[in-house]
Amino acid sequence: MPAKASRAAFGEALVELGARDDRIVTLDADLSKSTMTARFARTYPGRGFNLGIAESNMIGVGAGLALAGKIPFVCSFACFVVGRFETIRISVAYTGANVKIVGTHAGIAIGEDGYSQMGLEDIACLRALPNVPIIQPADELETRQAVAYAVEHQGPLYLRLTRQSLEPVCPADSRFRLGRWLTLRPGNDVALIASGGTVFNALEAATRLQSEGVSAEVINAASIKPLDEDTLVRAATRTRRVVTVEDHSIFGGLGGAVAETLAEVAPTPLKRLGVTGFGESGDPKGLYAKHGLDPAGIAASVKKFLNR
Amino acid sequence: MADGQLDAIARACRVQIIRMLTHAGSGHPGGSLSVIDLLVTIVFGRLRHDPRRPDWADRDRIVLSKGHAVPALYTVMARAGYFPESQLVTLRQLGSPLQGHPDRVALPGIEAATGSLGQGLSISLGMALGLKLARSPARVYCILGDGEIQEGQVWEAAMAGPKLGQPDHPLDNLTVIVDYNRIQLDDFVAKILDLEPLLAKWQAFGWPVQEIDGHDVAQIGKALDQAEAARGTPALIVAHTVKGKGVSFMENNPEWHGKSPKPAEAIAAIGEILGVSEAAWPDYLRTDATTRALVDELGALDPK
Image (cartoon, rainbow over all chains, first blue to last red; front, side, top):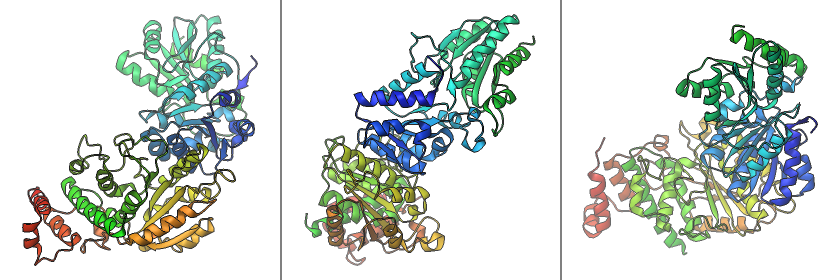
C-alpha cells in the first residue's frame, strides 16, 4: 500500500460502508473537501449535509439525526469540532447519541496553516467525557478498520485523523480492536508508545537506536481511550522505561493517559514527547524536527532519557 | 380535548409544579409556570405518543430546550402515564430519574438532554430531518426560552432551519415555540440583552412567525394547527407569557426564576392557582380531601 492520509482513507472507507448501510450520513461545516467526505455526498445524494461554518449547530443536528436512527459522521478539523466542547458534552455524550465525531488535520503536521488550524488539545478535552472512545489510526489499513468499527460501535466515538500522508505500518493481517494496542516491533530497553502520524517516526527512531545498541519496542496505540492496560503494563514491566510520542499537547493526551495508568498500576519512569506550547506555521518536516517528533529527535530524547 | 379540560389539566399541573419544587427545596418555578399551558396544549391536545412505548419510532417529540423548566414537563409526563405522579416529589433527589435538568438516559420519554442553553433547536432540526429521511409522519416540537435565544448556537440553527433538507426533505415537521416570559435569571431580558425586534429577526432568517398569548389554550391550539399546515418550512410561534403565571407573588418577578417556595408560600400559591380566596380557603379544605392532604404534606416539610 502506498502512503495515504488517514482522512483520505476515511473518505474512501465511508463511501464503501455507505453502500451497505443507508443509516450512514455525513455532516460538514464547509470543510468537506478537506475532511474528504465530499465524495460520500456526491455518491449518495441527500445523505451528505453541509451546515455551513457553524460547528455547534452541526454537532447538535448530528445528535438529533442519531436520535432519529441515523449514524451521522460529524466532521471538521479536530480543533474546530472539539472546540465546540459544550455541545459535544451535552448533546452527544450525556445524551448518549450515536454520533461519530471526526476531527481531521490533527497536530502540528498540518504545517503552514499554523496554530489556529491545528488540533492539539482535542484528545485532552474528549478524554474527560466518560463515554466517548478516542481512536487515532496510524495508516490506511488501520483507518479503514477503524471507520468500519465506528459504524458498528453503539454510542458516541471520536476519530482523530491526519492531513498528511501516512506510510503503512500495520501488518496486513492486523485487526483494529477498541482497547487493544499493536506491538509493531519488539524490544527490551524501552517501550515507545506512539499513535497516528508519529508511529512511523517511532519505528524509524527504533531502527536508529538499534544501530546504537538500544533495543526499543514500538507500540501503536490507536485506541487512546480506552487504552490497552495489559499491553502497557506488560511492556512497562519488561522494559522498565516508557516513552510516549504524540502529535498533540503533552498535557492530557496519550502521554497523560499512559502516565495516569502507570502511576496507579505499574509506576515506571516515563518520558512524554509531544507539543509543549502552541503550534506555529512552517513546513511539516521542519516543525517535527523543531518539536523533536522526527526520527532523529525521538531517538535523541530516548537516549537522553536512558542516560546513554 | 376541549379548551376547558386543557385549562383544568394545566391548573392541576401548576399545583404539582409548586408541590415538587417545595419538596426539592430548589428549582425554577417562574419558567415552569410560564411554559405549562404550552406543554399541556401540545401533549393533551395533539401529541401522537404512547407512554408505554417511549421508544416508538414514529412518536411525536418534544424537546424542551429551556431545560430548567423541566418540572413542568415532568408533571405533564406523569399525568400522561410515563411514571406515577407520586414520583414527582423525588425531583432533584439522589437516585431519582427526575434530574434537575432533563436527562434522556435516566428517564424514558425525555427526548434530549437540555439545560445547557442553546442546544435544543439544533437537536430538533436533526430529529426533524432524520424523521423526514425515514418518511416518518412524526412531528417535533421545540420549546425555547427567551433568554436562551441570546446563545449563538440558536442563531446558527435558526439560519439552518428553513434551508436544511431542502428541496426534498424540508423540515415542515418542526414547530418551534418561544416562551417569551421576558425574564431571565439576573433580571428582565430587556435589561440584560434585549431580543427585540424578535419577530423581525426570525422572519429575516426565513421563518414564518406567529404571535400569540401563551396562556390562552385556544390561541395556542390554533397557532399549532397553522404551524402544522405550513408546507416546505419549519414554523415559529412567539408565545407571550407571564413568568410565574398563576401565582401573584411570583408573576413578573425575577426573584422567582430559580428559587423554590417555602411550605407556607407553596400553600398560598396553591390556593391562588385553584382560585380560592383566603376567606373561602378553610371551607374549601374541609370539602376537598385531596387538597387537604397536599396542604398537610407540604405543611409537614421542614420550613428551612
